[in-house]
Amino acid sequence: MKKLLLFALILPIWTLAQNKQTPRSVVNLMKEHVTCDWAETTVDVFKTGNPDTEIKGIAVCMFADMKTLQKVVEMNCNFIITHEPIFYNHLDETDAYATDPVYHEKREFIENNKLVVFRFHDHIHMTEPDGIYAGMMNKLGWKNYEVNDAGTLYKMPEKQLADFARELKGQLGLQTVRVIGNPKMKFTKVGLAVGAPGGARHIQMLNMPEVEVMVAGEASEWETYLYANDATTLGKNKAVIFVGHIKSEEAGMEYCAEWLKGFVKDVPIHFIQNEANFVTF
Image 1 (cartoon, rainbow, N blue to C red):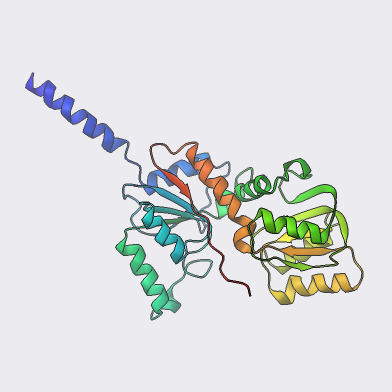
Image 2 (image 1 turned 135 degrees about the vertical axis):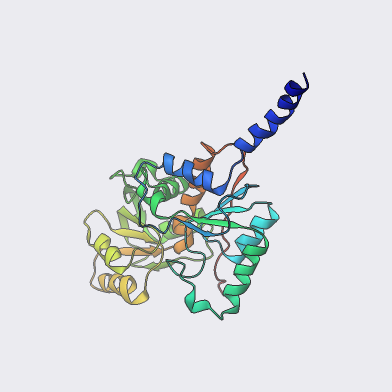
């Protein structure tokens, strides 16, 4: 009888331990739910912390900057899934910051608060549908205008460039947008180029007959900016609206948070919106 009672007491504890969610177990679930094979070479790896830590809460974001990390701690989360690098370059290489106080204080904050950070970049783009484009399409309400099933090309009712730019500014909660092109230009064909794919890919998209206006994240000013300005001066019916890297992809990470809720159970999951990187005057 005593043995049965002891077993009855131990069983709930053992079951609870078996059901404990860790960053590693969540990432393993993510690997099962993406539609692509998990790449051997990828930036989608743990960046900081112990992957076998018990999760208190999950925070999903675009950039794990200091303001976001502070919010994570305030919300009692300890596992962060971020789309972009945490330490200022694509591979999060930190040798150059050996004596940098900003890097060291950020690292210290992460370690003191026992935060685990995982980057989810390559595979959210590689899965079908591309989670970043799917989230942006939902946010902007463009689903009925999609023409290529990839979230990159759209055919819309005729619009004027200036009106469209103002519309995007409101939808994305932006302080400002940068527009290259004739403000009175009318168009129906739109290309979406999120993040920072580079000037060559931007120019390739602008060259497509299916694109009159490209909505882009960010670019080097001597590449896409220069090309779009030349196209405008030459009388081409082409334009670019830059909404910034964060806002061109952030709705995709909000989509990611909802996606995670479909298969990660018994753990709070929060989407954290990044604040603007700069102020305007």
